[in-house]
Length: 520
Image 1 (cartoon, rainbow, N blue to C red):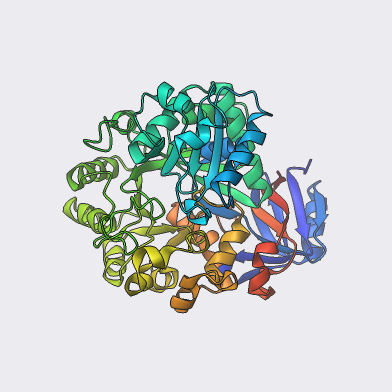
Image 2 (image 1 turned 120 degrees about the horizontal axis):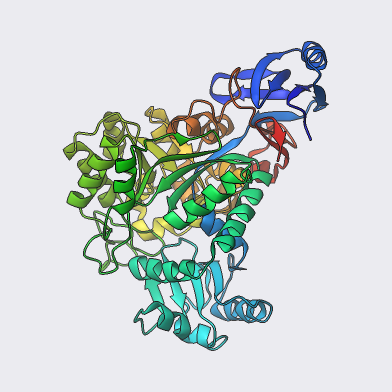
């Protein structure tokens, strides 16, 4: 185990990607960076203090990656469920399900990651497809977007949901997931969270923005924190209350938000490893499920326009309450009509320049970018959506192509923009995200890459959004950057990414991850 004083030498180091801060060596004491210097000087200082010296032999050292938006509990569930990513047909899905079901003894059978757009049958899987494989245990398979899924008859029965096809979206989908989650013990949840944290840290993530955290997941986190079993920094964004099952409004109550208000818990409450940061609000759905709310109908389904999950009045009330309590808001907005509503709600609530976040911003018009900047809002985006949602132009039509994931336009406007993966919606591997931001899928022949080449970021810009800018959006100046007095959260990688061929960015490997100067 690394001692409390360590000199790290012979680095090809980048301390602050945004300001071109390079370094050769640095000294760490009790988890903080004390100084930078030459390898010779740092080695001598470390030895004089009774510490050890770690020689990186010219390897590239970067600040640890910060994922601004992921679902830690869901990622843990995904790691313990059937992986359906890349499945090309309903029959292939059934084959995978049958093989998985024969090997597991769990009370529920979970699968995640299918996308009907890839199926040769060009249809959604149904209850009957699942029942043909498993009719005794409940089965739930979630679409890659985590806004829709399919249940078998047993899962429908247990969840109390009526759906002839077994297909469930938004509220009913969440209801089924809540029923499954309630079947988990605290120890089940703790194991899933530990699996997710271990997986993320191995890939170079040193800080995670845990969105849509509920009270049971928070309880599991607190138990792990108390026992010293959290080795990755976590910033928590809680649901404001229980989701309404009737569809009359988004939330049945604001119980969790009110509890935070009553206790005086504000953003940043906790220690360096685990902090309650704010409130996450789900304002609409996804483009993949056509539940994201657009100002004009979907081009490939003119009878559908999506819908909001919440009304502007309810949203404005939550904004005012959370902001008044000193909490940071993270509001899911994918469709441009939803983004209009969010911007109007902030304006109507007179909440300006408070560092609140909008998540995803998948269909974002130029006039909305201007309003984001004027209202002092931050952007939290998921670049790999560009590749995964290869059908995006078909969904929105070529006339709206320039609105789809306009990363360069957001960055050049001066809006702080952080990267996330929405894992398990996307692969939590940061290099996959950097690759997507830089290439926009041109090597995969993604139509959006040809339609919007000017929205591609440079390698430096992409890594900046995953480090320093993410710290800004997460409102923590000590994450995403290596500086004197800051956390020694860093990664050692297989090659210098700033000199890499863009086509090979996704192949870069994280050799070692350090949090507070300790290998994890």
